[in-house]
Image (cartoon, rainbow, N blue to C red; front, side, top):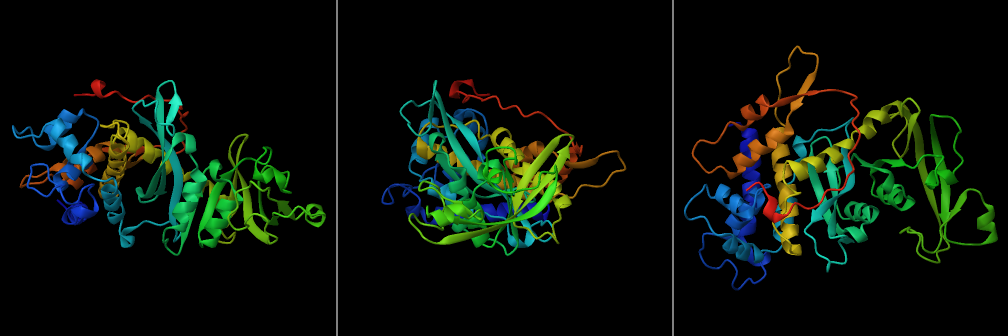
Length: 430
């Protein structure tokens, strides 16, 4: 076993151990919970939740305890996890972050993407925040994702009916410390002067896809070239005043009283200057994409944006792996606290697996295609490694390196956006 997998596991073990040594901060009743020696201690219960996949709860317990006759019952496990606050897993998630010295960069920049994905929940008509009708409940997971290093850096949860991805992004930006050179990628839902201003004031660079110039989005209100492709600088001022002078000035854009812009309070008489680039690039025949950015033209010409923005697709791929390889689409609970526990547990295990898998150096072969790690197989191997308690751990790196996939550039697959329902507890694999 190489130092990579050993060091990553040691870091996660340390984060779990630190939580277990101060249980009073992470349990509901500090005077009683986990104060006696039991088979299901705080640390063991946390590790069981982290190790869960898509099987039924009894099968998950049997797997973790290696089919011992002393395996705790499902009832005992539920009673134990009921004592733990979701903040225990959120704290482990924050402690277990990729060390800055090991990160990959693009032209000297860290590249982060913010996006969200729906999580199917057990049907609960009484939950007004998540119930969609017809017995469907959805929770929205917002995440900050390092697209080059394949790890989640931050996450929050919103009820589907109260989803606000822009507010989530702004909150994460304002409450985090970022490296000196960072680019934030966002899809069309983040097209907003408020978002642009928060990112710019934080000293962050951004590339955010906007609705095209022919639509009714933000850019339709600006004077932009009529050509298919262009790269122009835009400058204007925002105002909440409704005076004749303001309305007559074409360089001033009016904000209504309901418009969200944190840098101009209601009834403010100030002007706020906005400066950014608008880049329209050709993706394919008759297919164009319009991006808003504050990156310098000398360092990032228009020709660089096709590759740069394409990196955002990594966060979409990560959600697929999180749901179907890690097992987020197979929750083992119905209560809010239990669901939060499992969501952050899956995020932790995703990071654990990717921190190991992304360090694997594949041998170059003289073949038509380049090759990459099969991350689905890598996740299975890393999960087994996390649970392993014997004397001779598996050679994680060698196993992962044996399972590879060809890289086929420029492949286009139609997205399957058909909604999927929650998998009932009684229809699991075991």
